Image (cartoon, rainbow, N blue to C red; front, side, top):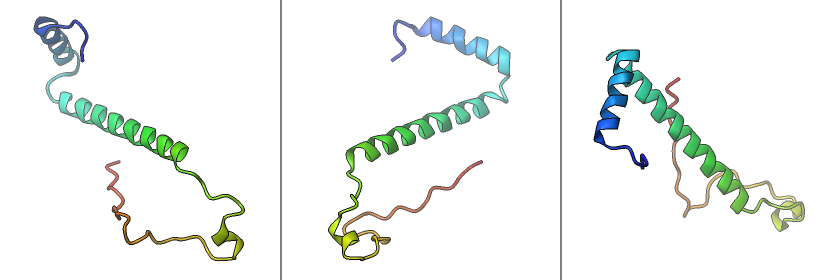
Length: 87
């Protein structure tokens, strides 16, 4: 995961980070780093989903018949609540 970094190199990096930012800021920095990674993964998944799922065309049978687009999920689809925003 970290390439050829051994335990000694990781300890030196951690000591430098501790000296630069202080012990109180390290949890803040790691939390914001985790949020950034989560947001990045979410956006990548959204892009993949938008590429793989077909969008309804103008000539979709439901739309051509004048039926409104489905706003409620089908019974077999999982409903997930919107996650809380921390910021």
